[in-house]
Image (cartoon, rainbow, N blue to C red; front, side, top):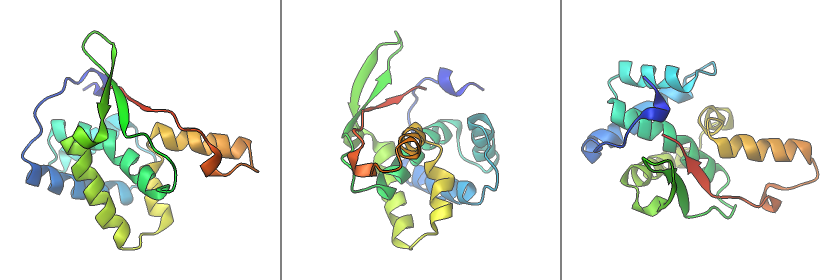
Length: 156
């Protein structure tokens, strides 16, 4: 199964998706290693998460965790996703039902005062986390607030 060749499909019913997000959070929090995206997708599906939901969760959950972890940064409210002709199309996070549910479940998780090591088990999976971390490591006097953030690009 190729993550990047997946075509957008209809999400399962939102209550099932919400349960899948909760399950995925637990799976990733308990991960002691750094599984590849393909391994995570296979694990999600093995635990009963549909392929469609697994891809949405893998794409958006790390972004939601990072945005909550660094909620004081000025995040863009939109992102780019490539269409079938490989052209970037701008979309709003607010218009994505899957992102909204993931964001709600992320907020519930953070309200329970999570351990920071557990948070990074999920947040590090986002390209934004890795870019921000790299910039801050190369510039030790810089604060995260000083980094100018670009819009996210989603590649399915």
